[in-house]
Image (cartoon, rainbow, N blue to C red; front, side, top):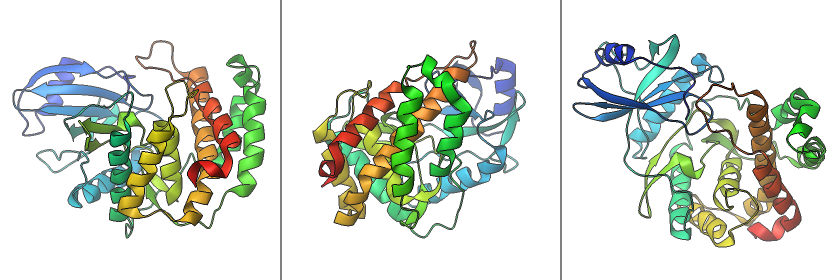
Length: 318
């Protein structure tokens, strides 16, 4: 989440008049994240999230995202639906951007997950994958394995302004991962970004799974690899928290299953996750507008994870 597009109080009040949600009391921009503009909106009846979709989110993909949220909510998963206006529309236009008014879910995103929280989050991902086993929705992953080398070349040697070895590190990692990527592995709709800040916790209970705007069709187990890379390291990527990683995998295994063959596939998938996030963070680092209210994220935190996965090998997930 972030704020790139500023919305006036008058525009917000006009938007809310299209819904049966009460009158505007307050609104506050949310700075976390890098993708869309987000506001916390309070009315005299309830609290909501207003999301304005910026350039990286294709408005043509919104029906996929919104149908996915509806399907997961119908299956009992704690996900926020986009509200329908009085005339039945989920997508509006605000400040020249497509926008949705979204249910607010209680809970907090934890900065330092405990093993118990990681286990609950892994179990939630397993339930999500189970609920989507027969999902007919489809959206290609625009940031999948085939996109990484082109993005590397678009960044080019500008990467070395972040770190003098960054280009060569990512190029070597791609040389290792690309020929080992199993394109025949089971596929399905995945979240593709289930970081701790996209899971709302109430104690050790998952209260919400949010921010599905990278959701796509890809190797199902890649979703778990992304999650492992996000949850089982400190923020710098320099310290691996083994007990958190094990708890995450155990929770997933309890609700979805995790075979020995799948565990053996995780090292390459985890390295791929590190390449993907190092590259997109680097791109954002090099290209984020100077006046954007947004927190840029360190790409080197993912090259450190990449080094760990490369050195740990198969034993980490056995």
